[in-house]
Image 1 (spheres, rainbow, N blue to C red):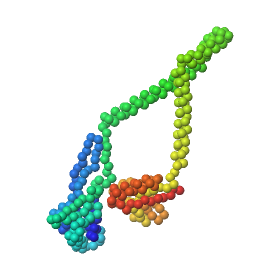
Image 2 (image 1 turned 30 degrees about the vertical axis):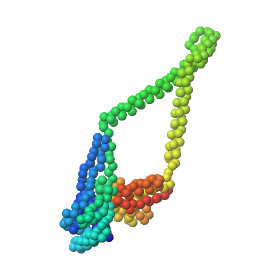
Image 3 (image 1 turned 135 degrees about the horizontal axis):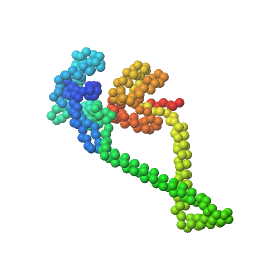
Image 4 (image 1 turned 180 degrees about the horizontal axis):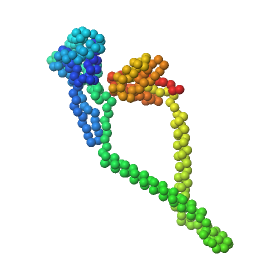
Length: 318
Protein backbone atom coordinates (compact mmCIF):
# COMPACT_ATOMS: atom_id res chain seq x y z
CA UNK A 1 0.00 0.00 0.00
CA UNK A 2 1.17 3.59 -0.69
CA UNK A 3 1.74 4.46 2.96
CA UNK A 4 5.16 5.95 2.26
CA UNK A 5 3.50 9.15 1.06
CA UNK A 6 1.86 9.64 4.49
CA UNK A 7 5.23 9.07 6.13
CA UNK A 8 6.68 11.94 4.10
CA UNK A 9 3.66 14.13 4.91
CA UNK A 10 3.97 13.42 8.64
CA UNK A 11 7.67 14.30 8.57
CA UNK A 12 7.04 17.59 6.74
CA UNK A 13 4.36 18.57 9.27
CA UNK A 14 7.14 18.97 11.83
CA UNK A 15 8.33 22.15 10.10
CA UNK A 16 5.28 23.12 7.98
CA UNK A 17 1.68 23.79 9.03
CA UNK A 18 0.32 22.69 5.65
CA UNK A 19 1.42 19.74 3.51
CA UNK A 20 -0.42 19.24 0.19
CA UNK A 21 -0.64 15.88 -1.53
CA UNK A 22 -1.36 16.85 -5.17
CA UNK A 23 -4.78 15.67 -6.52
CA UNK A 24 -5.74 14.36 -3.04
CA UNK A 25 -5.83 17.18 -0.46
CA UNK A 26 -3.86 18.91 2.28
CA UNK A 27 -3.04 18.08 5.90
CA UNK A 28 -3.27 21.29 7.96
CA UNK A 29 -2.30 22.00 11.57
CA UNK A 30 -4.34 24.79 13.18
CA UNK A 31 -3.25 26.41 16.43
CA UNK A 32 -6.17 27.00 18.81
CA UNK A 33 -4.21 28.68 21.62
CA UNK A 34 -4.15 27.53 25.23
CA UNK A 35 -6.49 27.91 28.19
CA UNK A 36 -4.35 29.21 31.06
CA UNK A 37 -5.51 29.75 34.62
CA UNK A 38 -4.14 31.48 37.72
CA UNK A 39 -2.55 28.22 38.87
CA UNK A 40 -1.02 26.69 35.73
CA UNK A 41 0.09 27.27 32.15
CA UNK A 42 -1.19 24.55 29.82
CA UNK A 43 0.25 23.32 26.53
CA UNK A 44 -1.01 25.08 23.37
CA UNK A 45 -3.91 23.33 21.66
CA UNK A 46 -3.69 22.23 18.02
CA UNK A 47 -6.04 20.48 15.61
CA UNK A 48 -5.19 18.39 12.56
CA UNK A 49 -7.60 18.60 9.61
CA UNK A 50 -7.69 17.45 5.99
CA UNK A 51 -8.84 19.89 3.27
CA UNK A 52 -9.87 18.25 -0.03
CA UNK A 53 -10.02 21.59 -1.84
CA UNK A 54 -6.27 22.19 -1.63
CA UNK A 55 -5.07 19.86 -4.39
CA UNK A 56 -2.65 22.00 -6.39
CA UNK A 57 0.99 21.04 -6.39
CA UNK A 58 2.87 23.66 -4.36
CA UNK A 59 6.15 21.78 -4.88
CA UNK A 60 6.85 21.08 -1.19
CA UNK A 61 6.21 17.33 -1.20
CA UNK A 62 7.61 16.83 -4.71
CA UNK A 63 10.85 18.66 -3.91
CA UNK A 64 11.31 16.75 -0.67
CA UNK A 65 10.87 13.36 -2.41
CA UNK A 66 13.24 14.50 -5.16
CA UNK A 67 16.01 15.27 -2.65
CA UNK A 68 15.35 12.32 -0.35
CA UNK A 69 15.21 9.66 -3.08
CA UNK A 70 17.71 11.38 -5.39
CA UNK A 71 15.41 11.41 -8.42
CA UNK A 72 14.31 14.11 -10.85
CA UNK A 73 11.47 16.50 -10.05
CA UNK A 74 9.36 15.07 -12.91
CA UNK A 75 9.91 11.53 -11.60
CA UNK A 76 8.87 12.69 -8.12
CA UNK A 77 5.62 14.22 -9.43
CA UNK A 78 4.87 11.06 -11.41
CA UNK A 79 5.44 8.89 -8.35
CA UNK A 80 3.03 11.02 -6.27
CA UNK A 81 0.39 10.92 -9.01
CA UNK A 82 0.54 7.11 -9.20
CA UNK A 83 0.35 6.81 -5.41
CA UNK A 84 -2.74 9.04 -5.24
CA UNK A 85 -4.39 7.00 -7.98
CA UNK A 86 -3.74 3.80 -6.02
CA UNK A 87 -5.15 5.36 -2.84
CA UNK A 88 -8.39 6.42 -4.54
CA UNK A 89 -8.77 2.99 -6.17
CA UNK A 90 -8.29 1.21 -2.84
CA UNK A 91 -10.82 3.52 -1.16
CA UNK A 92 -13.43 2.49 -3.73
CA UNK A 93 -12.99 -1.16 -2.70
CA UNK A 94 -12.05 -1.10 0.99
CA UNK A 95 -13.69 2.17 2.09
CA UNK A 96 -10.82 2.80 4.55
CA UNK A 97 -7.09 3.58 4.40
CA UNK A 98 -4.84 4.10 7.42
CA UNK A 99 -2.52 7.12 7.24
CA UNK A 100 0.05 5.85 9.77
CA UNK A 101 0.06 8.14 12.85
CA UNK A 102 -2.10 10.84 11.27
CA UNK A 103 -5.41 8.98 11.17
CA UNK A 104 -7.42 7.27 8.43
CA UNK A 105 -9.34 8.02 5.24
CA UNK A 106 -12.85 6.65 4.79
CA UNK A 107 -15.25 6.95 1.88
CA UNK A 108 -18.72 8.18 2.89
CA UNK A 109 -22.02 7.35 1.21
CA UNK A 110 -21.71 10.32 -1.15
CA UNK A 111 -18.39 9.06 -2.44
CA UNK A 112 -16.44 11.84 -0.76
CA UNK A 113 -13.24 11.25 1.19
CA UNK A 114 -13.59 11.83 4.93
CA UNK A 115 -10.58 12.05 7.29
CA UNK A 116 -10.69 10.68 10.86
CA UNK A 117 -7.82 12.20 12.85
CA UNK A 118 -5.83 10.01 15.25
CA UNK A 119 -6.61 11.31 18.75
CA UNK A 120 -3.25 10.00 20.00
CA UNK A 121 -1.32 12.07 17.44
CA UNK A 122 1.28 14.28 19.15
CA UNK A 123 1.68 17.66 17.51
CA UNK A 124 5.36 18.47 16.89
CA UNK A 125 5.16 21.84 18.65
CA UNK A 126 4.08 20.04 21.86
CA UNK A 127 6.91 17.49 22.00
CA UNK A 128 8.38 17.50 25.50
CA UNK A 129 6.02 20.16 26.88
CA UNK A 130 4.34 19.69 30.26
CA UNK A 131 1.90 21.92 32.19
CA UNK A 132 3.64 24.55 34.35
CA UNK A 133 2.10 25.03 37.79
CA UNK A 134 2.21 28.55 39.22
CA UNK A 135 2.14 29.94 42.74
CA UNK A 136 1.42 33.52 43.68
CA UNK A 137 4.23 35.54 45.24
CA UNK A 138 1.94 36.36 48.17
CA UNK A 139 1.42 32.64 48.86
CA UNK A 140 5.15 31.92 48.60
CA UNK A 141 5.99 34.70 51.06
CA UNK A 142 3.28 33.45 53.45
CA UNK A 143 4.70 29.91 53.33
CA UNK A 144 8.21 31.24 54.01
CA UNK A 145 7.01 33.26 57.01
CA UNK A 146 5.19 30.20 58.34
CA UNK A 147 8.32 28.04 58.05
CA UNK A 148 10.46 30.71 59.76
CA UNK A 149 7.96 30.93 62.64
CA UNK A 150 7.98 27.14 63.07
CA UNK A 151 11.80 27.09 63.18
CA UNK A 152 11.88 29.86 65.80
CA UNK A 153 9.35 28.10 68.03
CA UNK A 154 11.21 24.81 67.70
CA UNK A 155 14.53 26.49 68.52
CA UNK A 156 13.09 28.19 71.62
CA UNK A 157 11.59 24.89 72.78
CA UNK A 158 14.92 23.05 72.55
CA UNK A 159 16.81 25.89 74.26
CA UNK A 160 14.27 25.87 77.09
CA UNK A 161 14.65 22.12 77.59
CA UNK A 162 18.44 22.32 77.71
CA UNK A 163 18.36 25.31 80.08
CA UNK A 164 15.98 23.53 82.47
CA UNK A 165 18.08 20.39 82.51
CA UNK A 166 21.32 22.35 83.03
CA UNK A 167 19.80 24.36 85.89
CA UNK A 168 18.61 21.17 87.58
CA UNK A 169 22.06 19.57 87.39
CA UNK A 170 23.78 22.69 88.73
CA UNK A 171 21.31 23.06 91.61
CA UNK A 172 21.49 19.36 92.54
CA UNK A 173 25.29 19.32 92.87
CA UNK A 174 25.82 22.86 94.23
CA UNK A 175 27.80 22.80 97.57
CA UNK A 176 26.53 24.47 100.78
CA UNK A 177 27.49 28.14 101.16
CA UNK A 178 27.55 28.04 105.03
CA UNK A 179 31.03 29.31 106.13
CA UNK A 180 30.76 28.46 109.86
CA UNK A 181 32.93 25.90 111.60
CA UNK A 182 33.71 22.54 110.10
CA UNK A 183 31.20 20.62 112.15
CA UNK A 184 28.40 23.01 111.47
CA UNK A 185 29.32 23.01 107.77
CA UNK A 186 29.09 19.21 107.62
CA UNK A 187 25.78 19.24 109.45
CA UNK A 188 24.39 21.95 107.17
CA UNK A 189 25.58 20.17 104.06
CA UNK A 190 24.05 16.89 105.17
CA UNK A 191 20.82 18.56 106.18
CA UNK A 192 20.65 20.55 102.99
CA UNK A 193 21.38 17.50 100.86
CA UNK A 194 18.81 15.38 102.77
CA UNK A 195 16.22 18.12 102.50
CA UNK A 196 16.88 18.42 98.76
CA UNK A 197 16.38 14.69 98.24
CA UNK A 198 13.07 14.66 100.11
CA UNK A 199 11.89 17.79 98.38
CA UNK A 200 12.77 16.41 94.95
CA UNK A 201 11.00 13.13 95.68
CA UNK A 202 7.88 14.86 96.98
CA UNK A 203 7.43 17.97 94.86
CA UNK A 204 9.97 18.18 92.00
CA UNK A 205 8.91 15.36 89.74
CA UNK A 206 8.95 17.80 86.82
CA UNK A 207 12.68 18.51 87.39
CA UNK A 208 13.48 14.79 87.36
CA UNK A 209 11.52 14.46 84.14
CA UNK A 210 13.57 17.31 82.69
CA UNK A 211 16.74 15.46 83.65
CA UNK A 212 15.41 12.36 81.91
CA UNK A 213 14.52 14.45 78.84
CA UNK A 214 18.02 15.96 78.84
CA UNK A 215 19.61 12.49 78.85
CA UNK A 216 17.21 11.37 76.14
CA UNK A 217 18.15 14.37 73.97
CA UNK A 218 21.86 13.54 74.35
CA UNK A 219 21.20 9.86 73.48
CA UNK A 220 19.07 10.77 70.43
CA UNK A 221 21.69 13.22 69.21
CA UNK A 222 24.42 10.59 69.51
CA UNK A 223 22.24 7.94 67.83
CA UNK A 224 21.42 10.28 64.95
CA UNK A 225 25.11 11.06 64.45
CA UNK A 226 25.97 7.35 64.37
CA UNK A 227 23.07 6.57 62.02
CA UNK A 228 24.02 9.43 59.68
CA UNK A 229 27.62 8.23 59.58
CA UNK A 230 26.44 4.66 58.90
CA UNK A 231 24.13 5.81 56.11
CA UNK A 232 26.95 7.83 54.55
CA UNK A 233 29.15 4.74 54.53
CA UNK A 234 26.35 2.65 52.98
CA UNK A 235 25.72 5.24 50.28
CA UNK A 236 29.42 5.34 49.45
CA UNK A 237 29.62 1.55 49.17
CA UNK A 238 26.34 1.12 47.23
CA UNK A 239 27.11 1.15 43.52
CA UNK A 240 24.77 -0.24 40.86
CA UNK A 241 26.43 -3.15 39.01
CA UNK A 242 24.92 -2.01 35.68
CA UNK A 243 23.79 1.17 33.98
CA UNK A 244 20.86 1.15 31.54
CA UNK A 245 20.86 3.68 28.69
CA UNK A 246 17.96 4.83 26.45
CA UNK A 247 19.65 4.74 23.02
CA UNK A 248 18.30 6.97 20.22
CA UNK A 249 20.99 6.30 17.61
CA UNK A 250 24.26 4.52 16.95
CA UNK A 251 27.15 5.02 14.52
CA UNK A 252 30.42 3.21 13.76
CA UNK A 253 32.63 6.31 13.75
CA UNK A 254 32.80 9.48 15.78
CA UNK A 255 32.27 11.84 12.83
CA UNK A 256 28.89 10.33 11.90
CA UNK A 257 27.93 10.10 15.57
CA UNK A 258 28.55 13.82 16.10
CA UNK A 259 26.58 14.66 12.96
CA UNK A 260 23.63 12.56 14.20
CA UNK A 261 23.94 14.13 17.67
CA UNK A 262 23.59 17.59 16.14
CA UNK A 263 20.31 16.56 14.45
CA UNK A 264 18.82 14.99 17.57
CA UNK A 265 19.78 17.97 19.76
CA UNK A 266 16.93 19.98 18.24
CA UNK A 267 14.51 17.58 20.00
CA UNK A 268 16.65 16.56 23.00
CA UNK A 269 19.30 19.18 23.93
CA UNK A 270 20.70 16.89 26.67
CA UNK A 271 21.57 14.05 24.26
CA UNK A 272 24.94 12.52 25.22
CA UNK A 273 27.53 10.33 23.49
CA UNK A 274 28.51 6.93 24.89
CA UNK A 275 31.79 5.68 23.40
CA UNK A 276 32.35 1.92 23.14
CA UNK A 277 35.06 -0.10 21.41
CA UNK A 278 33.58 -0.11 17.91
CA UNK A 279 30.40 1.96 18.36
CA UNK A 280 29.34 5.46 19.29
CA UNK A 281 25.88 5.43 20.88
CA UNK A 282 23.66 8.46 21.56
CA UNK A 283 21.50 8.27 24.69
CA UNK A 284 18.96 10.64 26.23
CA UNK A 285 18.92 9.34 29.83
CA UNK A 286 20.38 6.53 31.97
CA UNK A 287 19.13 4.46 34.94
CA UNK A 288 20.62 2.26 37.65
CA UNK A 289 17.58 -0.08 37.75
CA UNK A 290 16.29 -2.06 34.76
CA UNK A 291 12.53 -1.92 35.61
CA UNK A 292 12.66 1.88 35.80
CA UNK A 293 14.52 2.04 32.48
CA UNK A 294 12.02 -0.27 30.75
CA UNK A 295 9.05 1.71 32.08
CA UNK A 296 10.61 4.99 30.86
CA UNK A 297 11.41 3.47 27.44
CA UNK A 298 7.81 2.37 26.85
CA UNK A 299 6.47 5.81 27.75
CA UNK A 300 9.19 7.50 25.68
CA UNK A 301 8.24 5.51 22.56
CA UNK A 302 4.55 6.35 22.99
CA UNK A 303 5.26 10.06 23.56
CA UNK A 304 7.83 10.34 20.75
CA UNK A 305 6.71 8.45 17.62
CA UNK A 306 9.63 9.94 15.74
CA UNK A 307 11.97 7.95 17.99
CA UNK A 308 9.90 4.77 18.32
CA UNK A 309 13.02 2.72 17.41
CA UNK A 310 14.73 3.79 20.65
CA UNK A 311 16.13 0.81 22.56
CA UNK A 312 17.63 -0.15 25.92
CA UNK A 313 21.35 -0.75 26.25
CA UNK A 314 22.89 -2.32 29.37
CA UNK A 315 26.50 -1.67 30.37
CA UNK A 316 28.34 -3.37 33.22
CA UNK A 317 30.02 -1.00 35.66
CA UNK A 318 33.66 -1.84 36.40
